[in-house]
Amino acid sequence: MRTLVLIFVMLYVAFAETSAVGPQTGSRGKNIFFFTFCEGEDVYDDGCADNAGEWQRLLTYYQDMKHTAGSDDYYFLLESYIYTNVENPGLKELNRATLRAGSIRSLLKFQLGVSSEQIAFCINRSGRVPGQVKVTVVRQPMPPGVNRDIFYSLSNSTKDIYNALTRYPEIPYYDLYYYEAKAVSNKVAAAAATEKPSAEKPSANVSGSKVAATKPLRELPANPARPDKKSSSSVPHSFYMGIKTNLIPWLGVVPSWGLGGESASGYTKGAMMYNGTVECCFAKRYSLEASFLYSYTSFGGRSDNLWGISQLTVEPRCWVFPDGAFRGMSAGLRLGYGDFDMRNNKPEKQGKTGRFYSMALTVGYTQPVFRHWLLEGRAWVGYRNVYDGKNYRVDDADRKNYLEKGFAEGQWMVGVELNLGFRLGFR
Image 1 (cartoon, helix red, strand yellow):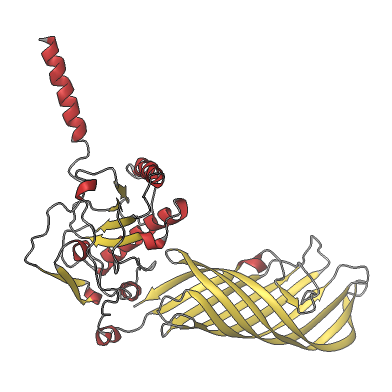
Image 2 (image 1 turned 180 degrees about the vertical axis):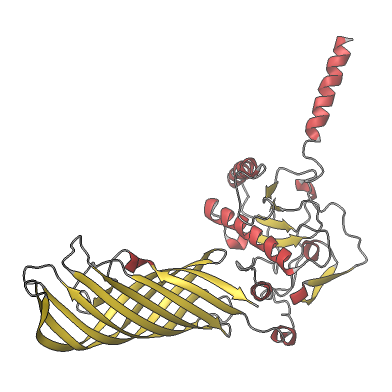
């Protein structure tokens, strides 16, 4: 009797372990991995659900596969599941699905060294595993024409998301690639996609499959037709406002030099300089900036010197890619006006003051880092002309400044910037 009970318990435990995957993920093969995103979050978190365990399982599987003979032909299929089981998901749901898949693709690229050419992406609207991205390692070559792009917007603006999703020839739905049904976007602004059933009934097993049952992506035309330009042009262009600040002057460092190698101001380090920029982007590839820089204080730990400067600049810019994303390379023309008053702490206590105007050509690169935040590096070369300049001597006895001589000078200069920015989109 004890033997029968023991056998019954062992069978029950074995059955429970085989069912441990649960109805949410379904049966999964050793080449299938699920990464969960906490509700409302778009950034991958190792501590959410069993992400750490899934990542370790993927790492082990990938390393074993790389050491297997004839393992060069493979690709990663990313399926991003949307929350609701609807045929016409909204723009924000689609954008969230692509954004989450983008974070998983970054993990594959930077931690496993997988090329973008080996990563396919689609959106699964079955609603069976909401809030997850499914990664399937398919052990065969990727068919030509399969979607490898992941376009998304870091902004929550409807127009920003529209501009990102219209870069797809058509929304890359899972059933568009895996079934013979054709999902066509009639209106991307509403993300309306309708399925036309075919003679072949699609398989019911959408959420997962064993390695042997993994169905390959069907081949698509290499150059699918783009969406109708008339429907895209009927939507107004996005409008952006942003604020930025140059991090280098906050450190008290003078980030400009004369072409002869000397510091443009005669100083290599001064006091902290407050600065800020307001940016307006328009017409998908142009922007206009207005900025200020100000400081009027002592520096170098001394109270008997002075670092005073104020400057206003205006800069129109043109972006290389006219896609409305306002990222990547750009060039501009900067016009500036300002004045200065700088006094050293030497025994003779001499100072100089004056006004200046400047013009410079700029080249920069803008990289979004998280949601609305961005980093921007910029270099410039230009000419500054100082006029109404005065060299003076400070007399502590009578607390007066005495003019020694006037001066005017021009100088070719170069400089660098490192900007931190926050950008918003408005309807």
